[in-house]
Length: 126
Image (tube, rainbow, N blue to C red):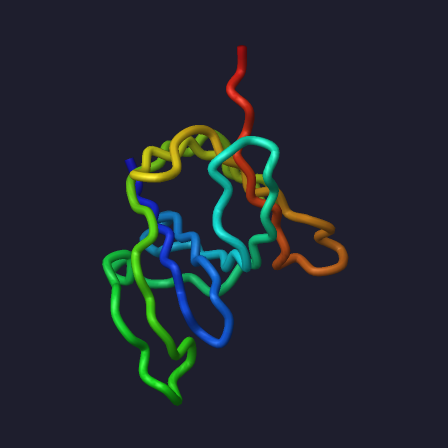
């Protein structure tokens, strides 16, 4: 199973970086608010540049003057099972320390800003 990690990043603004291993890199999104642990909570996820796989273990301080300056800590990590991976919708089963269950990333208004996605936990199916 591919890996996933969420890094809490205290840069200019506190945010969380969601990273999913795919095609030899970490596909990445920045979440301005803490990732949802319960169904029904939706979070904005802004797609950012891919990161190298080695970045999944990074914790530390990015020095002032460098892009992303601030403190980076691993907030959650684990593995995931891809259920669906299409250009405008990604569905994964997360097996993390904090996040567990089926999560969805869906592109929000792709014609306006293709970098904006919604990230949420699906309700368990009965």
